[in-house]
Length: 239
Image 1 (cartoon, rainbow, N blue to C red):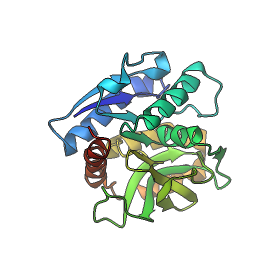
Image 2 (image 1 turned 90 degrees about the horizontal axis):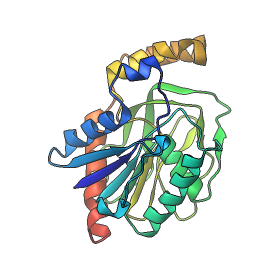
Image 3 (image 1 turned 90 degrees about the vertical axis):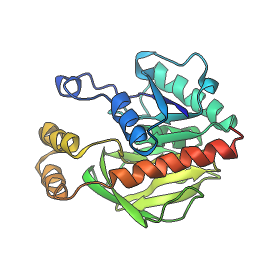
């Protein structure tokens, strides 16, 4: 399969530039579950867009420090593209910012969590099984967010919930799958990120995040969840 990775990460800091970018991280995650697949990154946040999104077997939208509520031309354009992808029943996966913008395109509101930051290793429980679901009842995943989806979009199925996050992941039919968290992050990356963000998020959030990192995320298991989703969605869409 050929997967288009739509990169939305606007962080061009020295910290980000010294580490693999989101296109690389997601491509690596996909290859861990499906070694024969190819991925191509498009930096939509820098106005780099696929000429023909339909040329790809599936689409993946990354996370970002940007807010889906920002008034940016590329976000408006990406939201419109999401509508086209969904209407065409093209397989679509979104993580964090991608999850939120897909939900927003379906009529949900994205708001600042009154409980504050989700940061570090976070747990989600499986609420309902999709046709591509594995045997796990939940996952431990890395995350870093303070905004989230306020309600399940109309017609969607809630797949995951977590502490303080009522809509941690959902499906729309058989061709859309989302997760609020960051399955692409490695343990080394989130450990560095927690220290990089320490002053920004404050001592209490940082201490909680550091304590959470005594364990590692279920990266491999969730990589296979994504792989099964694209396999199933491609069959369901006639691809």
